[in-house]
Length: 135
Image 1 (cartoon, rainbow, N blue to C red):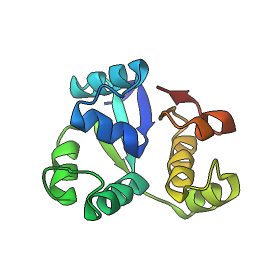
Image 2 (cartoon, helix red, strand yellow):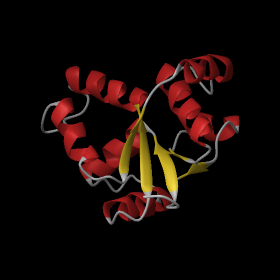
Image 3 (cartoon, helix red, strand yellow):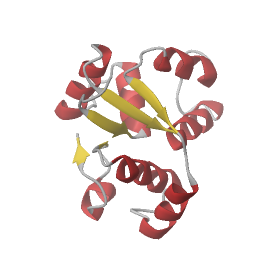
Image 4 (tube, one colour):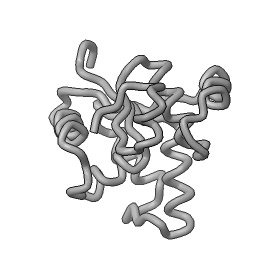
């Protein structure tokens, strides 16, 4: 999967894609569609997995299966790559803080560590200038 366009996904972007929602921005939708064809890579930070499990637990999202099964299905496509959390990302998230959401700090830190854009509609992240944003 080398030399393919790559981006990190924010939690809402991944959930919108999984639900087939029309809420995805044009560029984010195109990137996810390329991933489905295995022509691009979407990195999924561990913070996204954790946030999805919490949202599913309190019934804010319906993954239609357990989070473990949802992500096993997702990662069966090699275009979707889990991205491990490191201590450097934790420190970077603490230092940068694009907003009050701790998950957003960690997700931005992953995009910065990978030096790829972040698929998000979050205005605070966009305004922060911490990462390149596609939506």
